[in-house]
Each structure stands twice: as C-alpha cells, then as structure tokens.
Image (cartoon, rainbow, N blue to C red; front, top):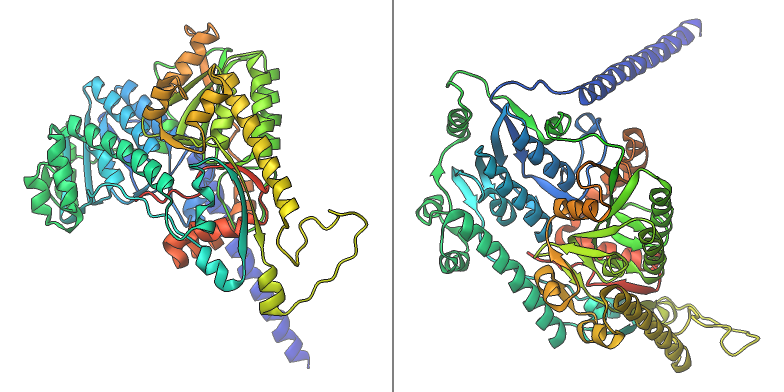
Length: 590
C-alpha cells in the first residue's frame, strides 16, 4: 500500500511539474510576443513595405499580440492600418517601395477602392510598387493593378470574371419546417424581406441589384484600365472569357500580367527595385511594423480630429453566442459620442460608417446623439463599404457626407419580420395551446397562432410610422422635403456615385479627405492630429472574450461555406429588434 501511495504521489508530482513547465514556457512566449510587438522594428536603408492580401478586409484592426501563438482562424486586413502604413511608407525615406503579396481576399468593393486610391497616391512619391502572387482573386488584382510590375507564378491563377449577386431564398425551406415569416414593410425596393416571402427576386429588386452591380463593376474596370493602359472593351472581353480558367500565358498575352516567375525570381526583381545586390537580404516590413514607425510629416497637437468607427449590424444590445461579427451597439455609441462631446481637445468628429443597418430604435437613438454632438463640434461622415438603411439613418444627422463611388448606401425604408412557428408547434410536433385573457389584445403575439387581421394592421401602422420618421430625419439632414426623400427612398439601394447625383451624399472621397474637411470646418486645418475611437479592445480581453467564439465561427464557416451568412441571419432573427432599418442582409456579391 505504501509503495502504491508513493507511486501515485510521484505521478501527481510529475503531472503538476509538467503542467508548470508548459505554463512557464507559454508565459515566456507570451511575454516575448508582447515585448516584440511593443518595440519599434529595425528600420534599415532600402526597406520595403510588405502588404499581404490574404483574409478578410475589416475596418479597424484589433489588438492581439498572441495571434501567432494561439493561431487565429481567419486573418484580417485592416483598412485603417493599411492606409496608415501606406501613408507612412510614402513619407519615410528609408522605405523604397511596396511589395504587394497577392492572394485570396474577401472585401466589400468600397474598402478595396479606398486602399487602391492610397496606393495610387503613394506612386506620386516616385517609389515603386511590385506585386507577386500564386493566385490573384479579382479583388486582389484590382489592388495589384496599381503596381509598376505584376508577376504571377507560372502555374498560378488570375481571376477576372465580373460581378454577380446570388441572393438565397428560404421560403420553401421554412415551409417544410412549418415556419412562416410574418412580414410588414414600407418601400417598393425593401428587399431584405424577400428571402422569407419569395422564391426569386422581385422585378424591383432585380432592377436595383442590376443597377448597383453595373455601377461597381464599371468603377473597377475603369480603374484597372487607367493603371494598365488597357481599353475598357478589352477588359470586359477578358472578363467574359473567365480568366481563371485560362492559361497563365494568356494572362501575359492580354497584358494584365507582366511576367511569369516563381517566388525566387520575384525576390530577384524586388531586390533590383529596392537597389539591393543579389546576395543582400530583403528587409520587408509588415503593415504592423510600419505603423509603429514615426511619420516624419506628422504633427503633434492638442487639437484632435476624432475618427469614430461604426461597423457591423446595428443592434440594441450586444449579441450573445458564437459570433464575432462586428456590431454597432446603439447604447454604447450614444455613450461614446457623449465622451467625445465632453473632450475639449476633440474639435471635430468623423464617423466612419460601414453598416447595412439593423435596429430602427437604435438608429434613432444614435441619430439624436449625433445631432446633439454636431451642435457643439462638426460631425462629418465617411462611408465605407456600406452605409445603408440604419447606416444611412445615422449618416443623415451629420453636416457633410463623403462616400466612395462603390459604397452601397440609401435603402431608406423600414420592415418588421416575426416568425410564425404555429404550424411547426401544433401540427408537426403536436403541441396544443389554450388561452384566457382579460382584454381583446392581451394575447398579442401568441405562440400558438399567427397574427390576426387587427394585430397585423397595428404592426403595419407602426412600420409606416417608423418610415415616416426616417423620411423626416433624412429630409432634415439633406434639405429636402419628405416627399422628395420618398421618391428616392422606398428601400432603394444606390452606389455612392449614384447617391451623389440624387443628393444623398455630398462628395465622393476617402476617409483622409473627410478628415481634412472636418479639420477645415473646425478651423484647425493648420495643426491637428487624428485619434481613433473606440480604442481597440486590450489583447487579454480579446483572448478571454473572443477566442472561443472565433473557433466556433471558423468551424461553422468551414462547414457551411456560402451558407454561413444566411444561417447566422436565421439564428439572430429571434434576438433582433422586430422593427428593422436594414438593407438586404447579405448582398452576396461575387
């Protein structure tokens, strides 16, 4: 017995000792990672900014120095940090150029257009841009077309095929489950409800999707034509050939690609551009590295232009469950804007909005907070990929609106959607419901039945009141009558360049241009600095709050593929405010 206890004790000690060693090693790695992330990179002569185009494009970078240790499931390309790095690389003499590492990139068109404009501006410095890839997705190629030389692996792929939208419809699927969506809406073009009521696109929705797709694609083709000196008709013909199915040699013959080389050959070319000898080592600096460097042209000042990022679905409260989707939480935005209002050093605010909308209630609360802030200091809006429906509701409270030509905006309309699962519950499962009530409408929204005619009329009246308020808010901000707004409203989606023509935005321009305009309005254009809000979540909170969600989400994405977004939409319906100011939830542009 004594020998047995000794053996057990020794095993336990061995286990805890091993656990301690593992923990100690992890702690050392963690400290090392954090230390290395906080120290400035080694800036050498002939350095090169390395932009890797792989992953998902997001508006704002998140602080997570442990990403490499823990292994992030999905890599991100942050617009704010990429723009910052490109601007600094232009101003720092030791950085001689940019190497764009092409790849598979998921992004909205407007974010790509914003980054592309920064790359075009960078070339005014006389510095080089060189790109190489094993595979250029269409979005990645759109950015890389700015390069002085574009290289492709001899066995690589260039994707160039045009744009398409493929919305998914759930009406028949839900009917098989015994679920029917009870829909209430205002707006001929308010197509966000169509997946639940139709089996195909309505004529009105097909009209608007065709319009904004052609607008976006024409921008892409024109920009590539300007950079590659290829006729628009030629690029359209190449898209019709579906270049991803053509041989790499055809990409060179078409002059979309300059040369076919392997990565070692690309490095030789890159060294020549940087002025390095063949045996010298390339000094590649990541976007994160360059962002840590000092900008020699930056000015320090107490005067601040605050850039407030509002990205994702508009919600009343923080959603729970396995989702890391960005959200605009109405109550938090109201609190944050109050902080900016009280900060005497903040002289102007730029709202960077990238949202397809969401809760009509939260949109109204934020509209009020923006108006209140604007009475004290200028509020300017910079639209990202989307600023539609609730996103436009917010925008209309500002003094001036900037948008990219390919921004998706408008969608001025309201809808309500409430599931009726009575058939599933009573006929398929076999549940029975009874009722006792004191007043006629005391059982409003009963689980065991759909809405009756009187209840439906009340809901429709509430939706129409919400739409009338939306029209009023926009008419106040855009100096139009509610009737004029209604003519361009009705839930219709527009691109930024179309919105400019009808007076929904004031100017086509970048975030930087919006910042410069805000500084001018605040009369601080000669001396100011830019600060970003809300501040990135600390890395340890990111680990505690998001790693589990990131894991579940990545597994669902891998399993469901293109069906992931529709699945998440169905999952979140029960947690959403029933009255929504939202554009089509997932445009599904390919």
